[in-house]
Length: 194
Image (cartoon, rainbow, N blue to C red; front, side):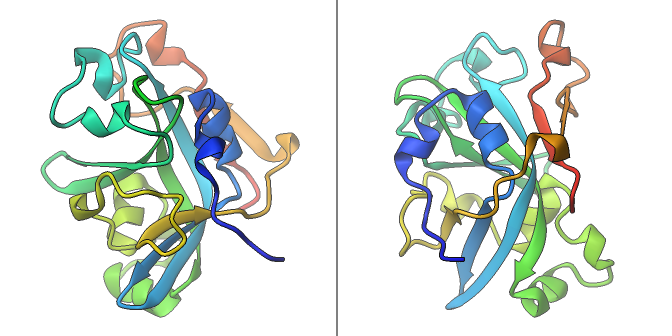
């Protein structure tokens, strides 16, 4: 199967649709000339200043400025004083929305990933947003990078779309202090087949 890097138009639409559509696509990190890659198997959508679980709820800041930029950029931030998290900016420029990539199934560069996730079983390498960033060496140095550039250090390629029957749609996690209706929004997508 031939692959191609997802274009900006893929991200320039409703963030919930983008979150669902990213399942089955391939996240690629080029590190020291080597491809580290995995199939995206879990995502969450965050939509605009009204979404009280979204970083943009406080408006445009130095931290969230990338979210207001063009679709198809990486919004990478540090959390809990220890983890980097990767998001894909979506919707038209000026509207702050992003998809958190929560998990990938490792496919390429397995030896390098194993070193970065030493002492853990393969099933634990990339099964969380902080874990996958550690495994693929994704840090704040890549914040704002164009995910649509096939010559870049980080991009997303076409993969195998996941059929509806193989997708769980759930509320987002890790946002327990957020009030309703945002707490229960069904904006988390998980591929069952991995």
